View 1 (cartoon, rainbow, N blue to C red):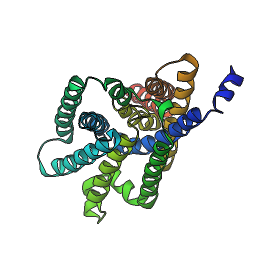
View 2 (view 1 turned 30 degrees about the vertical axis):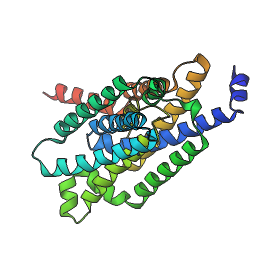
View 3 (view 1 turned 180 degrees about the horizontal axis):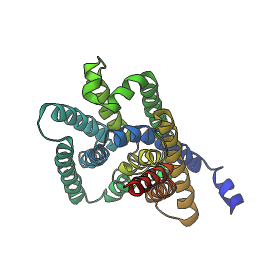
View 4 (view 1 turned 180 degrees about the vertical axis):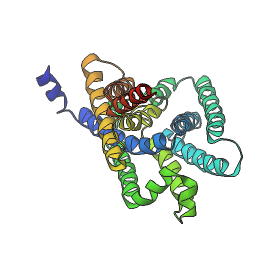
Length: 284
């Protein structure tokens, strides 16, 4: 079995799939830190459906699905930011409205599509083995851009994650940081349509960060654990999908869930909380 798996990685499609898994896991995991700590998981859902809706509309009108999904994500990010800042509605409510609208657009397009439904299904669930070299270059560029953003603005990001209002009062360009994160989320999601798929990628925008949340309070360690979790889930998901002939996107998401479940079960933070609760009960 091991030798067969090693032989499989000598083929270019498998090599591209493995590299795409590493890049997808890295980019989604970095964003997952912001999604989890800022408590905005619906951003991942909204962006994934924006990318999928844009890609489906692109297929309807003969436009490159990746390009149309990218444009749809950027437009969604441009709408979400000002709406969250200028209206009195809670961000969760705004995201819920945008999500439901985009879901309706996506499935309306799916209903209209006839001959190209197979291509739309690939965008929905992902198809790692069909990636081209240009897809890998795009993933690498997006991942590098996101990593440079995190490294360049790490101190400012720390302030924004703690409290946006306090960050603004301290002179930190919190709005620029927040809007940049929205646009980067759209860029990452649209570039990963062919890896995990438009309807599953939001899981990778939540679960690696949620895994790190169970294991550490340190922000640097948070990023590292999230990265390890996301990349590990993608690579292990690819291996499982190859061995058992399963859909790659679904396998990646299930592995991410398994990693989170293990972190939650053995979380030292939960053990400390339980011991403190017992002490409080005994002191009463």
